[in-house]
Each structure stands twice: as C-alpha cells, then as structure tokens.
Image (cartoon, rainbow, N blue to C red; front, side, top):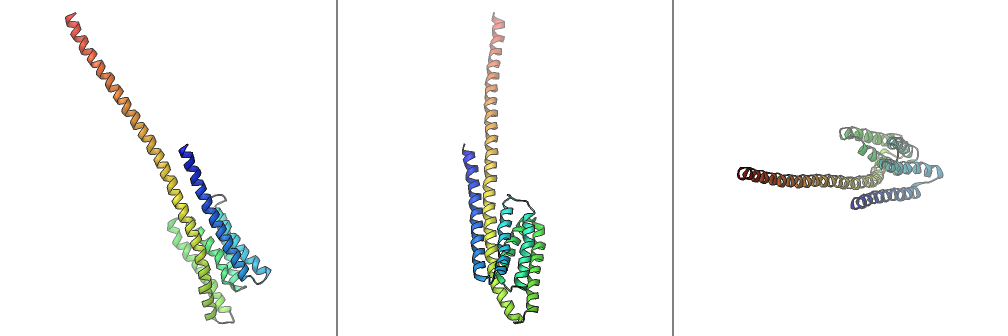
Length: 221
C-alpha cells in the first residue's frame, strides 16, 4: 500500500511539473505574440514556434513519439529563419531555444557538444544574413538581436533546464524507491535464512543429544 502511494505521488509530481512547464510556455508564447505580432501572418509564424516548443516538451515527457522533438526543431528553425530574415522579429528565438534545448538533452552526452555547436552556428548564420541584407545598418541589427533574441532564448532555455532538473530529481526518487524495495527483499531473505539456520542448528543439536543419550543407554540397558 505504501509503495502504491509513493508511485502515485511521484506520478503526480511529474504531471505537476509538466503542467507548470506547459502553462509557462503557453503564457510566455502568448505574451510574445501579443507584443510583437504586427499582422495575422506574423502572429501565425510566431504561433508555430510556440506550438513547436510546447509539443517538443510534451514529446520529451514520453507521451509522444521520440521523433516529435526533431520535427519540432525543423519547424522552430523555419520560424527563426522567417522571423529574422522576413519579419525582422527577434522574439522568434523562443521556439528554437526551447526545442533546441529539449533535443540536446535527449542526445547522448558525447553528441551534445557537436549538436550545440551546429545549432549555434545556424542561429548566428541567420543573424549574419540579416545583418548583410538589412538596410538599417548591421550594428542596429546586431544590437537588437543580441539583446532581444538572447533575452527571449534565455527564458526558454531556463524553463527547459528547470523541467529537466525536476524530472531528474523525480527519476532519482523512483530509482531510490526501487533500490529500497530490492534491499527490503534482500533483508527478508537474509532474515529467513538466519531463522532457517537457527532452526536447523537447534534440530541438529537435539539430534546430537539424543544420539549421545542412546549410546549411553545401549551400554547400560
């Protein structure tokens, strides 16, 4: 009964963590869209990035296919590309920052560095392309995207990192509970073996005494 309650509590913690992350992503995405969208097309483009971020986080929870974050990364990259080169909107970095972080955490550790470098190179390449094609001057574009895009990206990365941290703690709790259950089984086996050893030892001692008594009686009677 206690084990069932523990599993239920851990499941509730996971669900609460995911709900908090989803709500935060949706709220921040809606705020970015309401502030930066200048027309319906602009709003749709930013909405695709937010949807990719939310869907990638849900795919990370294991409820969807493992390919979902990769598809979301393609969508978020397209939003970043269109948002910077066409719409000149630095807030388009929200989707790619969230999805990119989710994908990086899913990769094995040896491959994370190479993937992070590749993703960073893509982001920088888009900004450089905007600087080259911008009529307003490369310095203004650099300052705008360096401050605005970085701020938005930091928010997205922080949310995903906190989600990853809490999920890791819950996983450690589950593993600890499993180890505790294994130790309880091992202790029960040890106790049973000890009791069996004591019983057998007592029985053998009684047999030994009876044998000694029988030897004496054989000689006297």
